[in-house]
Image (tube, rainbow, N blue to C red; front, side):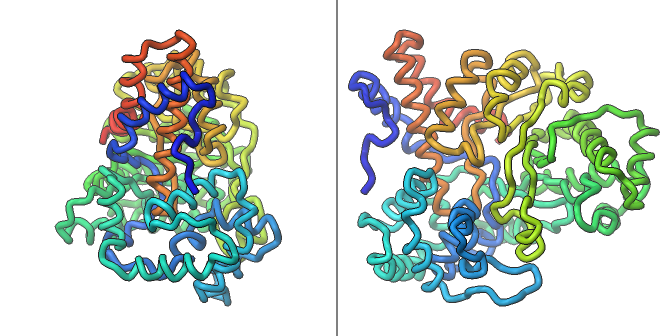
Length: 466
């Protein structure tokens, strides 16, 4: 079902160049510096339970589309926070997925799923209600074999390194199990401090108390709280972390005095922050995290502009990260200025900016990254992790920021089998864009081959210090 020239230019000259470029990058190792696969998979190396648990239940790109057509998340096996009833029959979930697969026509999710079916499982028929059971039985049979266990697939996919993402409250037991196993696969963690830097995060005070216990310090004082971050960051670094990851509602940063920050922290602990004060505290903590990065070398990732868990009902029933994080308009120029005034001219610092607001590409993000040594642009991401989104990103940022103020590609996925497909899409789109530059006289062909390699592999590895 997959066309060999998919995503390449239609014009023959550019298409031929794109093919040649792609052949040099298609089998490069995968560097996956930001994602949400479960480290337990690699630690236990147990077989995946069934096709539904592999393709549907963990993938919010899949189940949000089905939900949008009125299919309850419980019917798709998405767990409830109260442990209440949800579908557990993998075949029923799979049939429901197949019956509604037409909903994904034209979406990147369809491309990822179909490429996973073909490349990972050798399935080349069209997925539909008629072929659902055939697909299910074949995949289920494959999953029972040793070569389809997580570590074997990791190696087969050509993954050089993958980063998972954990809270500072995580004890990293699965990463420790991976280390003790002697397996050579490189799985690292990333420091995601949202539960202990966001006063509006549920259970904020109890999170801080637990944070202090794990760090062995009194995190309920401002000085102890900052020290707890330093201690936990060092602990995460001992398990391979090279980055921290910050998902804030806005891109706001602040550079408050220590007295002002301590006063805000006390209000946050007491549960007395206004929404404005909570946003100011989050903003100040981005600057504190940047200063800590100057000390310990962690790359700082900021991905603001999402109204997280927009559906109160879904949040109450199923919890966080269930496909209801919705993009909002985001200001970067004014919002980032306090952080940039403090550390933006420090070339030894790397701050990677992501966006869910495409209107900011050429107006704000590219000019900022094209000037400040500390800034790099993360790839087209989340709702723009698509052929069209990637192309627009290149068109709108390259003219001002160039290629080398960007950081290649990351797949940001919970769906393990989609990783090679998503990297393949990115490589095809970048080769198509470079081919167009060559065909229109804006880039020499030998340079295009070098840039293609950098975009597919080198930039991510360099930016994330992997």
